[in-house]
Length: 189
Ligand code: B12
Image (cartoon, rainbow, N blue to C red; front, side, top):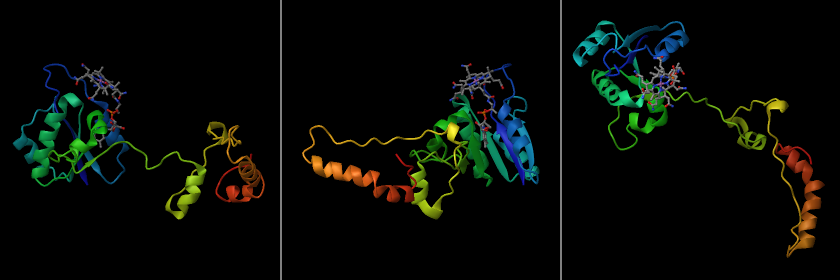
């Protein structure tokens, strides 16, 4: 696919340093795709010219990135591109903070087909949650020296109304209950 990465101009005359994201994403794009770059600061195009360029270059996807100060312009460009039938993915500092805005999930108009948030499809959870989720997730072990082990203290409260019962529960936990806990991913006391 031919992908266009587009950076809207920052609206500041003679104040422009190319943003890194376009070059980085181009370098990271897997082979088999061709990435073209347009920075509106260096190559100003009006809406009609941009759509003509996209059609002439047979672009199948447009990626637009923006800071908050440029985001209204970015949305406007995204609207024009989407109206021409080309899907738009947006990224950068603003949509990372406000993805619902770009996706029209805040009640406003939708500007992007997708947003790139840079999130990993992973989370740090308790081992016990990984076990409980069964085949639905894949656990990746964290090396012990980088891990945080949660301790769960157990005591009988000084003012407990059910002292003997509480003591029985603790001896169960520290005795036969250990097998149940181990089965569910807990380590021993
Ligand atoms: C370096 C930098 C500058 C340099 C820029 C030099 C240059 N042109 O390269 C200078 C000092 C000039 C600068 C100026 C400003 N900056 Co500045 N800057 C940064 C900084 C420290 C790093 C940006 C960077 O290059 N990151 C590396 C690139 C590769 O990462 P990235 O842009 O985040 O892109 C990644 C993802 O976001 C994503 N992505 C980004 N865009 C897109 C688009 C698509 C389609 C997809 C799929 C993904 C994607 O992919 C990339 C790879 O992961 C950030 C803070 C930070 N740590 O991020 C602030 C930051 C971007 N700057 C900010 C601001 C406010 C400004 C100024 C407006 C400050 C001012 N009042 O003057 C000016 C604007 C300049 C201008 N003319 O537009 C804010 C933006 C906040 C916001 N919500 O918009 C930031 C986030 C700092 C902050 N926390 O306040 N800045």
